[in-house]
Length: 71
Image (cartoon, rainbow, N blue to C red; front, side, top):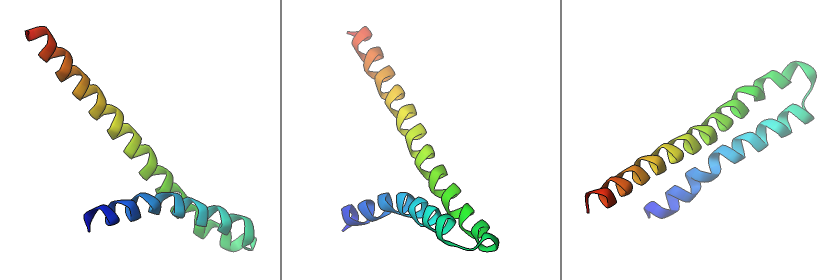
């Protein structure tokens, strides 16, 4: 059950970006600004995930190197 939720949550950010792009392209000039926050939040979520992944990878690599030096 948890794995299904993880996949659904992974699709939320790209979906938010797609909805904001469509809204910006298809709406009247006065209503376009309403779609901007959704796109920015989607981009923020994706960037945050990538930064967290890279930090975690560096930490794991550092622990592996430390463990190899101790042997």
